[in-house]
Length: 389
Image (cartoon, rainbow, N blue to C red; front, side, top):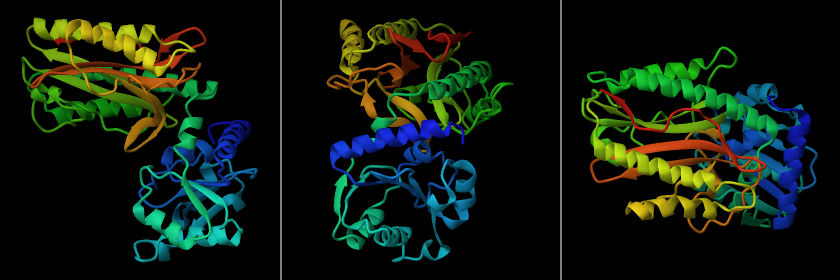
């Protein structure tokens, strides 16, 4: 358990308040990040069915996991042992049997089968089969989408969460320094990423790192015009740029960062475009303060792009915090025109300025915290195009 019992209780109360507002009496939270947020559970077991179950009046959530993973739940969670519920191997890959058959039985045993039940209909790993098992097994329940209720409860971080993200940021900085050192002409991409990953896992003398919810992204050459490309065995080539997007991780909290390196002689077009990109990023950052909206930040960012005639259709940011594969985003706030989410102190997001032009691109990004009066960057690393001549 990496937070105090009191912090987990405050999280539960926050979620239960939102449940009351939405008319939800029982919440089934399948999102791996939300299970961690509510209970402290942390294991690589999300590839199969598991969830947190929250009754609107309960003193603790329930943690529903495979029996093989129960030991991890006893070790990692803040829960009483009786609130860790397990299912046996008879439900593992024995269709039509499914772990949610056991979950349905538990809900019936507790006389909760006629309640209004909130489901995370778009959560990773909540499969169509999970939904069908609940729908068929609980015909008298009122099923509804909870609309990412727990995700929104996670939006404003506690001071303890912020401290973990700051630790993750120190690891991100080390990882990016390694990237800038090892990316050289003739080096295989996979070898470079091996060194980057080594740095991210070793962390610092004070705190070690962990696996990230997204692989280190490494588009290079023409690949910089595309998104989310990972390393291959191809070598880096002089004259080409490479975008590095990575995140240090501490206690599952992330602080992502992206930078661009150019091998060889300075390319004025890329330098100028990178400077325009940074200008837009800084303009958006300047608009971050409590009371402003995500839209306010986006408008300032796009004003600079419009000034230079640069077109960008994708969002330029999203909220971050806890992360498990396949994503470190929280699926709530977007830094995009029209998102009227009001910023509050300790809202955190990853703001990304990636510009793509057919067969090349540049990128810089920052993990950012809203403060009482403005904002602060989690990472301290130059944004400028890094030229290795």
